[in-house]
Length: 167
Image 1 (cartoon, rainbow, N blue to C red):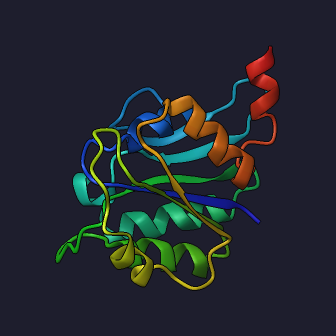
Image 2: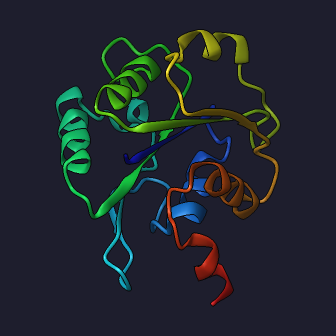
């Protein structure tokens, strides 16, 4: 079963920085595949939330299908904003579709965010599907690598992650 990691937080909360630390993607606006050049394992990254980059429902569903049917993918890492978009993907859309495709869904909420702003946790909790593998609140004011290590320790997205830090 593949992993889906959702990092939820407001603007400038540290979502993209944590994703860069976790996956090695090149920028905070990156959307695409990151490949481990040693073993060929892949992670699909959506480091700018679908609400920011206007990721269409069709593109998102294509991504879920492509990743779920390819054993080289370890999973998907996605940034999400706790907004109520009318024309773009919502938290509910993103997470419920990931569950339907059989991903182990791990949600990490940045509260407070990097600049100290809190999310409305009660509102976010109401919007999450019941079948999550884990739900954690992480402090966005911590170093991004510390949060990336915590996410890895819970989700095990990248099996050799901790070994590569030692090399």
